[in-house]
Structures are given as C-alpha cells and as structure tokens.
Image: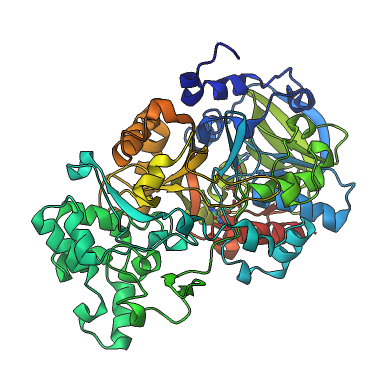
Length: 629
Ligand SMILES: Cc1cc2nc3c(=O)[nH]c(=O)nc-3n(C[C@H](O)[C@H](O)[C@H](O)COP(=O)(O)OP(=O)(O)OC[C@H]3O[C@@H](n4cnc5c(N)ncnc54)[C@H](O)[C@@H]3O)c2cc1C
C-alpha cells in the first residue's frame, strides 16, 4: 500500500485494487468464502453505486440480447429459495422466507454489485485514522408515521429504536454553527462565482434544523449575478403565485394539475431569462421525476421549486393533506414535510446491514443498529457453505427458467455470471427483487401481457457523491449548510445529516474532518423533452464519464463556491465516492399484471408498485414471499 499516493486514492486506485482482490477458481463457494480479509467494499472510493464491473453483463443481456455465455458450470447447489437482487427488498425477502418457513431453510441471494444493500449503500472514508460515514444512496426513513405493520414489525425485529433519532439527530447543529440554505451561482453558467444567502426555493426545507434565510426576496435577488432583466424576472417568479392566475379555488386546483409549470413561467409570468429558467428547472432535484420542465404546476408544487413555496402563495391550490407545515421548537415554520430525522450515519445501509447480520450472524459483532454502526463486517462470511443464508456478490443473473412447465414445475434454474464465467444453481422458488424492467430480459417465458407491463418501466438516474474533507472551515465561513447550485452537475452541496450514535460522532467543530454530501439529479440535454428520453440521455452521459471527469467537476464546484484562503482542493479533499445510480428511482408502475406470480417465480422490489421507498421495498418482499406459498 505504501506506493499508493493520496492522489491515487482520490482517483479510485483503491477501488481497482479492491476489485482485483476478487479471487475466482471456478467454484462459487470459493469465490466468496475465500475473499481476502481486506475485501471490504464500504471503504472503497472512486466510482461507486453502479460501479464499473457491476452492469456490463446485464447490459449485454438487455441491449445485445446476449444468451451465449460460454460453457455453464452446474454447481449442484439446490436451495429452497433464490433471491435475485440483494437490495432492501431482496434481503427482506430472504428474511421473511426464513421467518415463514424456518431458519434452517436454504436461501441464496445473488447481486451484481460488489457490496450488498442495492441503493442502501454505506460509504466509509478515513482521514487521519478517523472513520467518516455517509450514505451512498437510500438515506432516511420517509414518513415513518405511515409505515405499515409489516414494516414496523421487521424494524422491531432488527432492533430499530425510533426514539433514538430524537437525540441522535443534533437538531441544533446548524443553528450552533450558523449554517443555512444558500445558492451558489457558478462562473461557467452565470458569469461569476457568487454565493447568495438564500436558496430561492423550498428544496432545503427537509433538512431539520437548517437555518432559513433572513434576506428578503428583494435583497437576495439584488445580490445575484443575473442581468438586470434576469433579476426583475426572478423577483416576478418569487412574488408570483395563485393570485396571478386569478381563478376561483375549484378551477385553480384543476388548472394546476393540468397546466405546465414552464408554461406558467414563460407565458403567464413572461420569463425568458436563461439563468432564471435554469434555476427553475434544477430545483426539483429528487422530489419529482425529472426537472420541472416536464412537470405540471401541481407536480412542481410538491417539490417546492422556484416561486412555488406552498407555505406562501400557493396554499389554496394544494389538496388538503398533501403538505405539512413544520414548526420547530422556536416557533418558526420552516419546512413543509414531516421532520426528516430518522437517519443513520450510513443511511438505510444500516437496515441492509442489520438484515444481513440477522441472517448471517458471524458477519460481525453487534445486535442492533446502534451496535453495528462501527462494526466492520467480514465479507468472507457471506457465502460460506455452512450458512443457511448465503449472499453471493459480483453475480449478475442472466436467466431464470422453470425446470419444466411453469404451471407444474417444482424447480427453477438460475444462471448467473461471476468473473466472466457462467454458473447454474437451482431452487424450489425464486423471488425477483431486481430492477423490474430487467425481468423480461432474464425470465424469457413470461406471459406476453406481463412481459409488456414490465418492459414499460423505466428508472430515474440519480447520483450521491460523498467528499471527505479535512475540515469544513470554509463551509462555516460561508454559512453553508446546504447550497443550491443550479449551474453545476451537483445541484446540491451540503453538510451531511448531523447524526451521532453507537460511538460514532458527527463532526463537532469546523477544524474536524467531515463528509460533504453532493447530489445530482442529471437531466436530459433537451429542455421539455419527454421524461423517459431525458432519463436515457442523462443515464448514458452519467455512465460515460470517468472518475477524473467527476473529480474535475467537483474541484471546480467546491473551488468556485468556497473562499480560496480557506479551501484548497488538493490540500483539503482526502477522498471522493461518486455513487452513480443509473437506475435510481422507479418510474412507472407494472400494475397487478406486471407483478403477478409466474409459476414458482414471484416479483418483489420497490419497482413492483412504482414507489422508491424503503417501506415499499419491504412490503413488496413480504407479498412476493407470501405468493410463493
Ligand atoms: C440516491 C437514492 C436515494 C434514496 N433515498 C431514499 C430515502 O431517503 N428513503 C427511502 O425510503 N428511499 C430512498 N431511496 C429509494 C430506494 O430505492 C429504496 O429505499 C430501497 O433502497 C429500494 O430497495 P430495493 O431492494 O427495492 O431496490 P434496489 O436498491 O434497487 O436493489 C435491487 C438490487 O438488485 C440488483 N440487481 C438488478 N439486476 C440484477 C441482476 N440481473 N442480477 C443480480 N442482481 C441484480 C441491483 O443491482 C440492486 O443491487 C433512494 C434511492 C436512491 C437511488
């Protein structure tokens, strides 16, 4: 390791080294059981998420219809259940199956990534011996007050203590350090690097405790680097609202559900300034599916973008119950959603890790989420032949077929590719907990209607980047808790959620290391183009970039946003993980036909109901297991 420089570390050399640790000798048992003790994917940096090596086989199956994988080795392994996909849904399915049928039942989970958890991924960075945790994807419990009994029971089994978050989430962190929501205008797009102490939208409202702006709209607009015409138009948007439409309440509701937000901006408010339109397009981030250019006013309202703060001038237009005012303990109304504090230091990866820990107890110490926060799992334990549940990583499933007639067959054959070699395993039943639009490509005999329903699905690309910095003095100096960045690839650059638990301490002072969390909802090149087209454009662009492309973008972004005297990229950035989710949120719903059982094969995953949430991942796993009987 001594010849690995810090630059190499940032560049992801360790990721390549980590991948090369994957031994393979022709037997899958050896493939996972003989992993070196140093095989520990959460600590890999560089290109993560849909990392290189994770999606090539799936793409050649789906895009090039490849079926010839060379000679296939029959491993002579027969399981009670095989689960395709090791995300929260697949892991829950394995757990529920054993709960229903007995802990001695043999289960194999196959996943194409080098780590388990699907979108719920743990990012570890280390600076000067201090381990920093961040979320590579699925981050918090959303609306836990609405969790079903199935979800609550599972969380209880896993030892989740909902009350813990009340103290673990340091709600005063932002106030103590005077950190608020700002906007960073970059030189490349807006002609000048400038931070204005106002977010101009409601996106940051979900961060519990983040300070709201004290500048008025007029004051903030004057500080932007927009042209005089742009400033005038921005103010018009911010001061717009339902009164501009001048419609009775009943008609207003109908109007906002059927009329385009961009038409409202352009035609009703007369906005044509490219800077203002860009700000408007980029503020929906992950709340909507795509940019606001493809949204109705009603859809855009849900995301709180430019000029559509439902707490102010759009309240009447919102259906009752679709938004929630949140009043903090000082009596300030500052968010439109329930407090978003149910967050573990590595996000929902904690739930994935707890599920694995429950099913494979020797994977590491700790009996509940708090106790596993600092627990370094031993990945060599995941695929031991003596386990009743085996978890096999780096394994892309390419074919799932019944051993005979699907209506009567008692056996399903599953083929997967590991280290470029083809293997076959068998099971009495299979739960498909992978991206649902992939299922028609791997289950060739599906009934036509079901095949068509699944093929209609798409996914929204999304990216979380974690940047480990040696200190955050520059963020403190600029008062940045979260910066909206309409000119950059990452539309958001923020401090991570201030959560400490189980011996893990969130950064305390600006002199300490911390993780900056950057998020990007990449949009298509053509404003207003249909959503699915934009997702495709953005996905290809995302996957086509190298680590150094991302690094350059982040260097320019942080370098332009933060003062040079306090921040130097080469000096202060220790490591970067780019979690690219080319297939992020679900888009479309396969309906009852799409998710129906097919012989001994059932369908789980949050895609099965078109809703990307931890709770739907779990509920769909429960349904899929019950359907297997
Ligand atoms: C960036 C991001 C942030 C999010 N934040 C939140 C949040 O805060 N709260 C929340 O509730 N939800 C959030 N979500 C939604 C998230 O999708 C769910 O929380 C949940 O993790 C979904 O679990 P899943 O198992 O259904 O799907 P996935 O996580 O997609 O897991 C499916 C797994 O199957 C694998 N797979 C696919 N094809 C194959 C194949 N052929 N062979 C083998 N394996 C295969 C996939 O690679 C993946 O590992 C977020 C999602 C993203 C992308």
